[in-house]
Image (cartoon, rainbow, N blue to C red; front, side):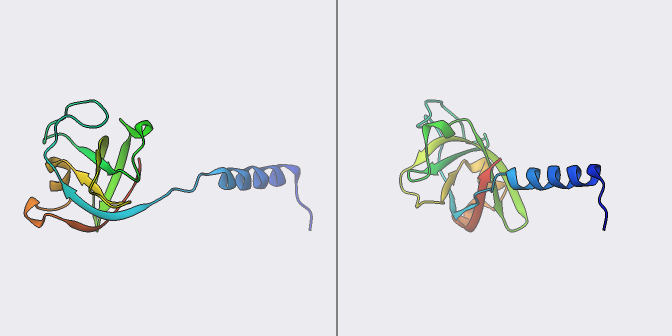
Length: 119
């Protein structure tokens, strides 16, 4: 079987691009909601903003201002990391009421499971 140099180069380039793609870490846990205010990132937010607090185990100051995509069933919301949730287990999050309402009615109180990744 004879291969052209162009085909081999294209194949190697494709393989390297696929191999270099980062593996997305998907976090799973529960989602609750909280009354926003002054967060651990140093900013004050309100309940109408799409913001989120990560668990103390998952939070890093370098995550402040980054977006995460939260998914529950067929619904999803993108929210900005602004705070730490000291009572949340690793993988669990605390959403602003506005963000929580994109996934479920506030009366539900807890959504389980949810998954999230950095957007």
